[in-house]
Image (tube, rainbow, N blue to C red; front, side, top):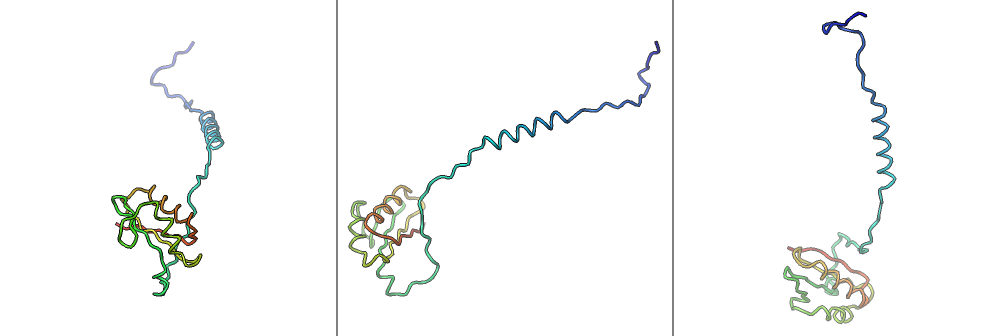
Length: 134
């Protein structure tokens, strides 16, 4: 039986078969695509304000609330309770088209903005908008 020497170069090259590994990767890819859940989360429907400038007579009909950084609700510069928002909006609405705007500080509680928004909506406001102040 002939012996092979360590220095003897042979024509046989070693190959690694990658087909099983590629098959496994494709199976894992299909598994993750099929098991991924696509959920659409519910949120608040907002009417975005137009960028047009209102005439001066319409600006006076606006009902505007301000939420400060320490989470206080202001109407015309005076602090009000959250329960007063309904009454103020009802008294301020001239028609269904009267805009109600809420200016909230970025440092205020987000839940307070939603509470003021809900109370204004319950009082009959249809044109609601909000903006942030700092």
